[in-house]
Length: 199
View 1 (cartoon, rainbow, N blue to C red):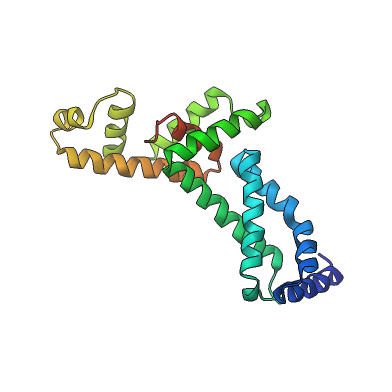
View 2 (cartoon, rainbow, N blue to C red; view 1 turned 90 degrees about the horizontal axis):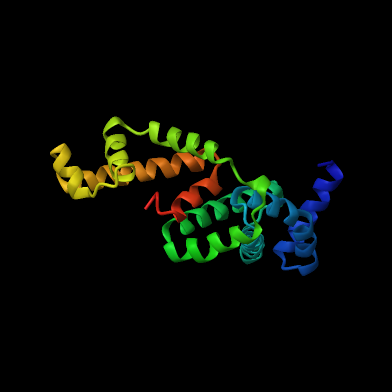
C-alpha cells in the first residue's frame, strides 16, 4: 500500500471512529472481497463465508471507538476474520444440528469438483492424523472406529476402566481435530464430523 493510500485509510479510520457512515462504507468496499476470499478458502461454503463478512464488519462498526488509526487497519480486519472463522468452525464442530443443517446442506449446494479432495487423499490425511496419536490413544481409537467396539468392550479387552477409555478417546478426538485444523483441511474435518467419525 502506497503512503498516499495509507494516509487516506488513516483518515477513513478516524472518520469511522466518529461514526461516519461514508467512511465505513469505503472501508467495507475496500476489504469485503478479501475477507470473503479468506473465509471461503477456509470454509468452502458460500453461505457461511458471506455470514463471516457481515459479522466482521458488524464487529468493526460496534467497536469502532477502540480503533487506532496509527495501526494497520488491514491487520485488524484479518485478525477479526481469522478469529470469527475459527470460532465458527468450533461451533459447527460442537453442534450436531448446526453442522448437519447449515454446513452439510450449504456445502452440498455450493461445492464444486475443484473443491473436493480425492478419496485416496482423504485416506492419507486421516491416517496421518491417527498416526500422530500416542500409542495408547491410537489403539483405543482404532478399536472404537475401525472395529466398532464399545467403550465397555475396549475396557474389557485392554483391562482398563471405562473412564480411562473415555479419557483416551477424548484426547484422540481432540488431537485429530487439531491436526486437521492446523493442516488447513477444514472441509475434510467438517466432513468427518458430519459422518460422526469424530463424535
